[in-house]
Length: 176
Image (cartoon, rainbow, N blue to C red; front, side):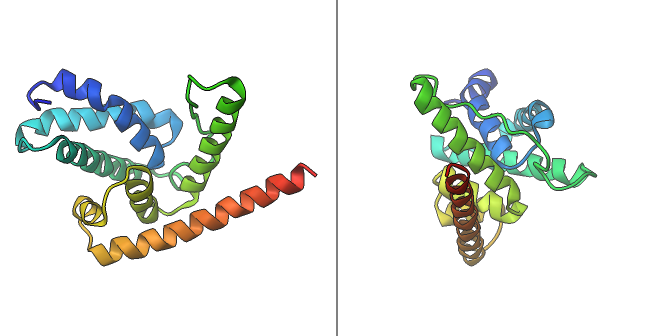
């Protein structure tokens, strides 16, 4: 994809940026504004991007997304990101209704768990586990050491595992 063609870049990355912004804890009422801010930033800086492989363009867009979401949270005066927010998740439209309902439940629970993580752990977890970036890529994007990436990821995985187990136990008890 040619970076000079902003419309193609926008159309290609809009679904991803929307997903990333939500996963990074931006409240539902601000999603559109933050996504728009991401693309305004990209539009202003796209000529600074050195043409490289699609994966590095993706990483660059993710880096812009992270910086914009951080700026949003910094400006925000209320509680932590995602607090008291009902999460809108969309299951696979091709799935049958029962499978779609299960997918929606799982995605909603995952988003709630992500909302409970602190920002630094959430960013690393989303990048590693959901976006499948390597530790060196994450370290470069977040401008932290690989050791910090490993530490935050280990802690985030443990918090997610505990929260997931707690939710499953709660559901099993409720269904008795």
